[in-house]
Length: 423
Ligand code: SF4
Image 1 (spheres, rainbow, N blue to C red):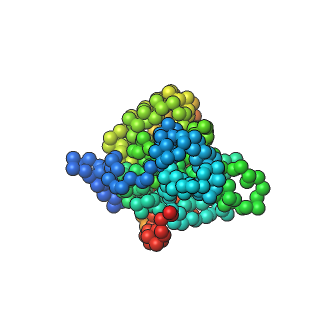
Image 2: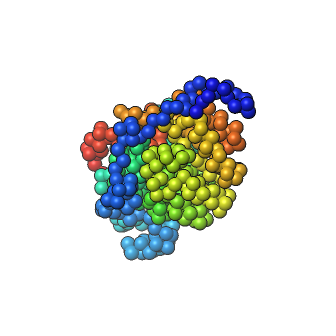
Image 3: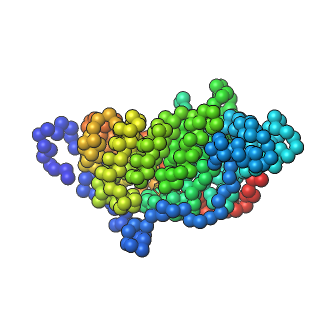
């Protein structure tokens, strides 16, 4: 609460726009929490049963690839050739693979690299430096990815599930529920297609020099889905991303796996021995609000999630990111910045940094971004408390391509229905 007489140790004037007294809550603003049979917040951890996508090279270990190649009547060394075409030249077109025998080539390539994603839409913004893709999967499910060029890096935000079962009230994807888990290869194919587009000069101004040899350098699992709810397939995809000999050969440090706080899976991730960057989407430092804002908090509380994040740092030595969507009058209060700093500092120094991001409003909803001075105050308080904090930009906002914004519209569904699957 603000008071007319600040305490003696207060050296800065209270910021008039920090409205300590205003507290907007999802439930009081019309959000109804769906409940399961036991009266707990509804969460979908298991993927609904649907036809599985065809098995693809990227779903398999190197040994399994050789076995499958042999099953298709080819000698085992052809697996290596296919890996080269797919992971280095980003092609699945048999016409490009002249080192394979012409007889039976089409069937063989189709058997190992079946089509997984059909491009339905491509939206560009930031003068071509940000591109959102809408993909249709083999069963008609829709997912999206967003490609962003920054100085010195190219980041792809990938989807790991069609829809999401975590039901966060501010998130467009969460409102649509979980359609199904994506396969490892469906995740990898998003990267391969992005690399193909970059190689063809499709990202940014083609007249700009220095495009040669560019490819996706950073991956963020912040598209559709809760990655740790699809753990095994996400980890297979990560292994393929970092494999220098049989995969994309990316740096693990450039890969960010985020979660809303599935604590047992965070512990498992810490023990994987792949030092990816780990991000915890916290969005509130107090259970009272977080129970409403992130329904999974009903299973694992703020302190448990923070303990797991700290343990991730201890195990991997990788600094953890805390993601915090700033929502006007909901979670952007100065006292919450102070409480967050207190909880992080209580777990030691130098292990964490905070990325507040102004929420992108869900169309037609009450959810809106904090005002600029409130954002600045939130960041200042954390930094003053010794927590490195950087306000993240909202690239892709114009095309609904920022986190929590990836959801197919009715118009997307209509266009998708008219788009035949790639053969
Ligand atoms: S914010 Fe993330 S975890 Fe929550 S519903 Fe949206 S996609 Fe799922």
